[in-house]
Image (cartoon, rainbow over all chains, first blue to last red; front, side):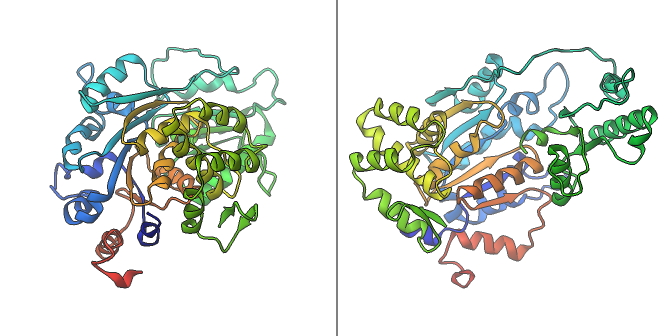
Length: 234
Length: 177
């Protein structure tokens, strides 16, 4: 076994689910599929497949309520299993798997295959759940409650707002900065909200996060992060 | 850079290969003693070690080896938690799994454990967002796992793809080493 360590270059390949399937329009194989087709040594060395954020199989991968799948590749991951070596283990990981979602995933991916369920408690003492119905996701005035109109000198702090798209995260940050600037003159020079998503460079993400944590060398402070789900992994 | 169990400090010279050899040469009792002695003080280590004691005999040695490996590759900073060991060892022993654990609870380490335990194994990790993929890659590097991120944005030239392929097959293109 230790000899293998010297030879090995990579032992984890991190991919988007679309990498397993030919492009529907051009028919071109993506890089992972190419690797799987052309390199038997690679294919034979695959021992585990991990589907992180496994709830996406249900939420993005299948048609629901008459709405087509957002990322159909998630719903077709079961089709790649026969291409993998015998004995490849399948692992679904998520923080959000209610029973009806698990049922769909089990039916699609596991069938009669045995599997171990490992469940950790998700609740934490400082979490409160609440919902608010809004008419339009693009209507950012729903976020106005964060602006302390009656006490302009107080700044909100340590707030992360999650969005489904980077465009909405950008727009919401702009909306909040404008709202704070209108309220208080000091906000004209410093921004209070910033977006945080994969469209930003690593340097920018690091700076924004340090500003959010109050550890940036400039002393600049960001109090509200408008993030895509990547904000959950910093 | 790994933690050297013999000198009890982080070593720049010791290779991962040598750490394996050392850990795999320990018997069950010696591995257990080493965990108690060396890892003392790390968050949650005594609860995990007591849980390991409650496992079947044939599970205990693998689980202790996983603990020592993780401890060593993180320069003595991380001791895995129970669910990470359960999930990691399930994969190592060829079992499928469904793992439900909160964001930030350390699911990446549960993916790293079987890849550390079996250096010949490759794991494919399907991840939905590019940003998540790069975060995961950095996290895996913390555990001395070598990740390759492949998505539409990664500009791999044909040559790089061939080199990546060849790295999986040292006989195809030995010069890449």
